[in-house]
Length: 376
Length: 160
Image (cartoon, rainbow over all chains, first blue to last red; front, side, top):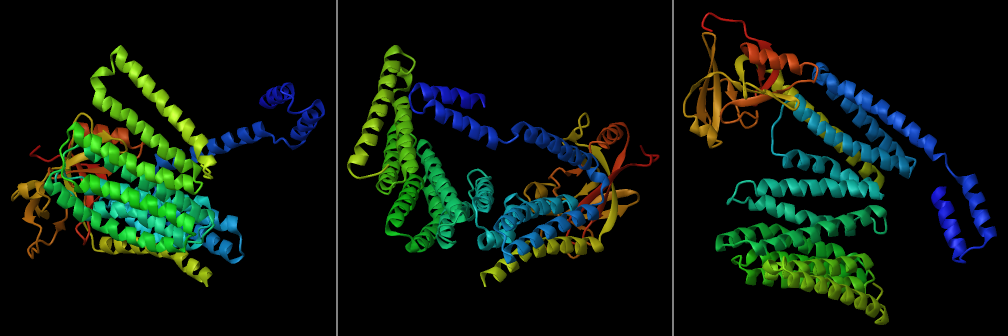
C-alpha cells in the first residue's frame, strides 16, 4: 500500500490522474486487497510443518525398510496417475496438469529411490534416459500448459547435459554417439513443439526452451575457436554431427506446418546455429588470434542473421538478444586483440568509446527498424 | 481417441517403476549373504555426507590391473574365515559361482565401496569403525550386484 500511495501522488503531481481518480483507485485497492501478510505467515507455518516432517523421515531414512519406502512411493505415484486420468476424463484441465506434473516428479524420485534401495550404480544419463522414456509420452500427449512444457524441456535438457558430460568424460576419447545424441535433443525438442497442439502454452514452452538450448549450444561451440582442433578431432566431430544433421532434417519437416513467417525465422535460427557449430568443430585450426577472429566473425554472422530474421518477423526479444550477443562478442574481441592495453589509460578510453559507439548503433537500429515497417 | 492414448501413456511410468522393482526383487530372491571384513577408507574420516566409505578387506588373488582397466569380475569364495576375492577377466567364466560385477556394484578398482547411514546412526558407526574390526553384511544378487546391507562389529579372532 505504501508503494501504491507513493505512485498515486507521483501520477497526480504529473497530471496523469486527478484527485477523484486517485481516491477511487485507493477505494478499489482497499476492497480488493488480499490479506497478504496472513497468507504469508500461514505459508511459512505450513512450510515449517512440511520441512519438519521431511527432516524426521530423512533422519530415520535407513530405519525405514526398503519395501515400505518403495510401497509408499508407488502408492503416491499411482494416486497421481489416477488423478491425471480423472482430470482428463471430466475434463478438468487444472487437475490434470497438476497431477501430471506430480506424476513426472514422482517417477524421477522413484528411479532415484530404487537406485538407493537396491544400490544400483550407473552413469547419470541412464536413469535420466529411463525417466524420459517413461514420462515423455504422457507429457507430450496430456500436457497443455507452461508447467508441463517446462517439465519436458528441463527433463530433456538434463538428459542432454548428462549425455554430453559422459561423452566427453574420457579426455581425448570422445564418445561421439552420446555427444551427437546430446546435440540432437534441442533440435528434436523444437520439432516436437511443431507437432504438439499449436497455439497451446505447452508447445510455446517447448519452443522457447528448445531455441534457448539451440542458441546456447551454438554459442558455447563457438568457444572451440579458442582451442586447437586437430584433423582427428575434426573426424570425431563429423561422426558426432551425424545425429544432429538427421535431427535438422526432422526439424525442417516438422516446421512445414508452420505459417510462412514462422517457418522463415525458425529455419534461419536452425540453419545458422547448425552451420556455425559445424564450421567451428569441423575445421582443423590452431588457437592463434587470427582463428579467434575468424570465429568471432562467424559468431557475428550467426547472430546477425538470427537477429535480422527475428526483427523481420516481430520477435522483439530475440532481436535484442542477437544484438546483445554481437555487442558482447565485439567487446571481448577488443580485449583479445588489445588485451595488454586495457590496463592503460588509452586502452580504457578506447574501451569506453567502443561501448558508447555500440550503444549509439543500437539506438539507431531501434529507431530505423520501425521506419522500414519492421516491428522489433 | 487422444484421451485413451493419454490414459495408456499415464500407465507407462507406473509399469516402468513396477518392472524395475520386480527385476530387482527377482535378482535378490536367490541372493546369498556374505559377511566381509572392512576398514575405513580414510581411517580418520570415514563419513562422507550420508555415506560411510570403506574398503573390503579380502584376500585378493589374480591381476588387479584388470580392475583398473575396468574389465574385471570378482569371484568370491570363503576360505577358513577369510573371504577370497579372485579377479578374473570380464568374460564367460564357468568356474565362478559367486560372481561380483564391480562396476554395477559401484566398487572401485581398489575395492572401496560405501553404505548409506542415517544422521542418527552415523556417529556411533563412525566411532565403531575407527575403534575395532568391522564387517559389512552384503547380499550378492544373481546379476552380480553386491548390495551392502548393514555394518556390524566383527567378532574378535585370535589372529587380530
